[in-house]
Amino acid sequence: MADEFNLIKTYFEPLSTGLADDELGIGDDGAVINTPENHQLVVVMDTLVSGVHFLEQTAPCDIAWKALAVNLSDLAAMGAKPVFFTLGLTLPESDDDWLKSFSSGLAEIANSYNIALVGGDTTKGPLAVTVTAHGWVKSGEAVLRSGARIGDVICVTNSIGSGALGLKLLQGSFAEAFKGEFTVQEKNQLMQALNRPEPQVLVGHLLHQYATSAIDISDGLVADLTHIVDSSNQRFGEISAQVKAEIYLERVPVLSSVKRYLEQTGDWSAVLAGGDDYQLCFTMNKAEFDLIRSNTLRFGVEITEIGRIVERDPSQGLFNKVSLTLNGKPYALNAQGYSHF
Ligand code: ADP
Ligand code: MG
Image 1 (cartoon, rainbow, N blue to C red):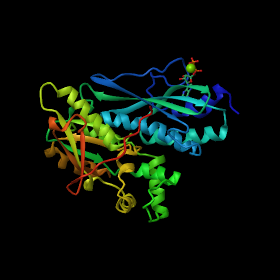
Image 2 (image 1 turned 60 degrees about the vertical axis):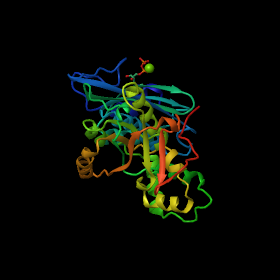
Image 3 (image 1 turned 90 degrees about the vertical axis):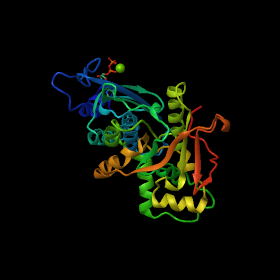
Image 4 (image 1 turned 135 degrees about the vertical axis):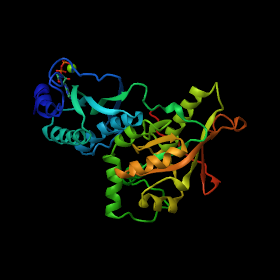
């Protein structure tokens, strides 16, 4: 059983790589990082708590993957290029098997996305993992939630709802009307989406010149899109008309297994409010969409137009921020996005 200092040296120092000769990662009181000219630092942080963000039986390598992935997803939504991260680890005990698996999952995603671990803190207590990640954007080019304008198309990357269905699969909590079985391959796909989400870093970076607003979908499409609507109205509210989002559900991209689930149950709540997607939702000018789409396809990411930003009719009340239709008919969602309190 490694003590605190050996634990850091064995499992985490090897991830402190890729730094310049005059930079400093793990080992001193603080990390020292060079800052490029004409850039701004984007800072994000997310905590994963055992029993809240992952089930107790989750493999340590998957916990590590997700802890960094959700942060990279936030950087992606800002259009930032990931550069370095720190790790706050609270562990009930120093268990070498657990730490070996955890640090291997962390190394895997850190290497995939070329981001260095430069420091952290290690404490004893109930299992929780906090990551702060840092990325660069060119000054003034960060993509905010607040830029959506009337006429913009609303788009998402890849498909949504897979992580939420993966969680249902684990918990055995499918809607009763669901008769169909999933194949082994489909189950694996859903579990992969839940445990190993791929943050949309490349798309995020590509979008920073085109998207008028962006958010990563962590709490559910409708809840997260509501943030875009709210922020955009706050920013432009005094000088122009209020906006709302219209989503055409038949266009929302889902895996074929998720599609079967939707057809049999008619229950969109997991897909729209389950969260755990870590795809990007963004708005942009329609004319630029086709151009971007062929670009993202080149590196294997599909983007789909799922709706429009339109003018909000004040007579329909304040709560009409995201309206949903399914094949032209209004659809009422009986669920809200995830909220801790
Ligand atoms: P201090 O007591 O001065 O805060 P620590 O003993 O906590 O120093 O940390 C020593 C070094 O190890 C620091 O560089 C710190 O950033 C790093 N470190 C501690 N815990 C972790 C961790 N979980 N992951 C990565 N680096 C860590
Ligand atoms: Mg410390």
